[in-house]
Length: 385
Length: 121
Image (cartoon, each protein chain N blue to C red):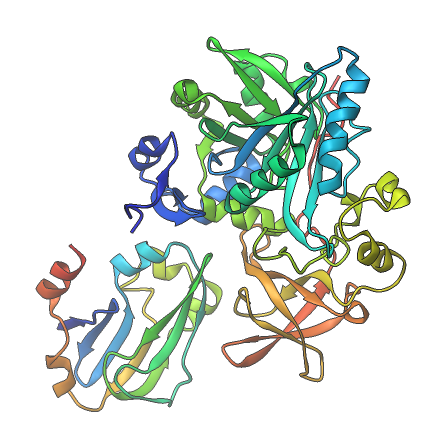
């Protein structure tokens, strides 16, 4: 049960319980897997309107230079130089207020986490770093070991992190916090709301347009209530968060990504920035650059599955029935009303249209490699004018 | 008409020597939206407690166990196109299969409505 003694609760726990949220353990926290309307209704509401998710279990933090020089570019370069050796993304060339999706890598080029890193729009020498819940302690320890006395990492996971996602999400928040609609995809800025400062990023994990909002714990319940007061908004649990990200083809750390998986294998070449490739100065560069130009052992693909959903761990078979890989995430797509899955197969079997099979309860079912995402992304890369 | 229940939240509604098997209202609520049902083959012999069907929600697959020994005589093919019938009408339109009861004595050991209500309370 969710009331287990060693589970942590989020700031908005009482709100979830009051709304009828079914609380389950996830990454050490009690969180709502669904509300009474159910996963399919919550999923579809998010695709059509605006879904409100409590993702306060995640790990937002700030990495700030200890001694700023006052030269904004030099200070940014200095803090970027502290974080870059841990990841494969170009942080140096981030513009103020820009966020980047990147990967924390070990020396073999395996993913220790996938995360977002942004350059502060206000404070030179400050980065906004948001890591996954299940890996946050190890991630923070790794960053702190790298920073020494040159920078200081401040955790911000004692407040609330809310995601408002869907085609109406930005309009909803803009009515409360004028100006947020000026943000473009993968940018963030601080705003004043209700007597406090919040950080809003135009980003998310659903494939829809939307925002993620960091707010101090004292103000979180007020913002939660203000957002839900808008009839375009409904609360959405972890179940629909998972089905939405699966349709969007986005990997889930600990399932589709782990320390054995490289960014190339995971289909995340875009996350290995060109400047970093040319400099070959990131962890595991030798393996990852070899995979860039040659062939990795396996590639993450999307599968349309006929019949019963193929879940994590199901074997992927070739047309002749030989085992060629494994499903890493799978389930039912509420938007497409069919079973979909993510999994790894050899590169020769990774082309869209390739006919494969998946083994579900000992029976082989047809599966077809398909382009990702399963459901098109609807990010807003330019602000409406 | 007798309805009996298992601790695994199946019901069996007894009509003569036929049992109509499905999952309880409580079970469907716990599982959430049902998106796929794997039905047994008609004519399949089942022992009491055998895996007889699979009901899948968005999140997970759940086995349905045979409440009694017998032969599968009918399956609810409406569930192939409309698995959500288990959510909207678990004990009527959302039945899963019918079984010819081999040993009516097995029914005695199952829970009656009062005992089942106590189990889920």
